[in-house]
Image (cartoon, rainbow, N blue to C red):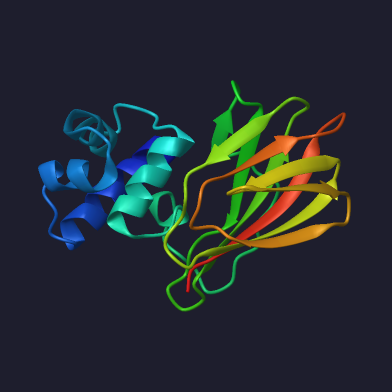
Length: 181
């Protein structure tokens, strides 16, 4: 199943389970009614920012918008990124999607040289756990700025604006876990 179809099905399913009209969904998410309708039909490929707005407005995890049906045991092999923002030189590989029993989701992130990601605030009391596996990253959280090198890790409150920037040469490889309390 393509990512557009998966997103379309999940957005519509979540909206209907919460008994939210398209008009109310637009008000909750800040995404226009027509854009939401196009997303639910699979007619558009929403950006990372739009997916975050929908997830936050619906008060669900980011990966719940993209996930397939879960299995008990899963081996995740090297796959193509589900989100590839060529303009910002940012690749996102959702490795483990949100699970109601575990309350987290996990990603493998690659930021090419000169690449950035401006992240919208996640749900209240959410936390991010970051580990740099290769390269150098500048991570800003609110007014704080951190420079992380290979092997460094960072935990921060993710319910505020934050951004990631490749602060070195070559590709920066990051493991990201988002925990929802």
